[in-house]
Image 1 (cartoon, rainbow, N blue to C red):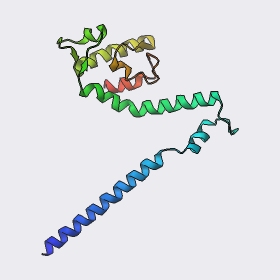
Image 2: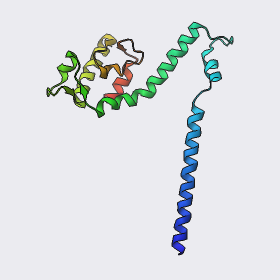
Image 3: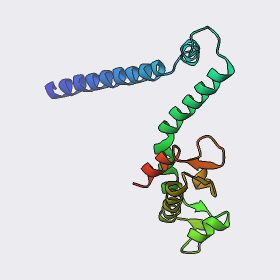
Image 4: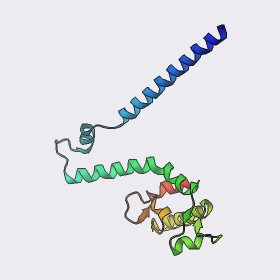
Length: 155
């Protein structure tokens, strides 16, 4: 009887601590989201109370950079977890077993070659859906800045 009561108390403590942890985590997530006022203050670089086109462009570029940093791990895993259907001649070149799909290792080889081109020329044209995941500004080119996530994925 004593052990059962002690076990029940322990379960209640664990449940309570878990609930506190979940609520704290949720609070931190909510706190991490900036309000409209905070976004405006961040965008208003000259502090004149007006966000002009130049400031808006700077803010959008900054937000995009922040998103690309957060997404780099997700991008890295996307092509490693699933097979990519070959959809063009560039991908077909890397489909070494000829099954019509790029296996994770085949994707890795394609991305290594793309990284070499970027290191040489400073940028490279996006030729596949796998590469497009690293083109954060969607301009059809992976530049040196965008290639940082690619470099991390190839480690």
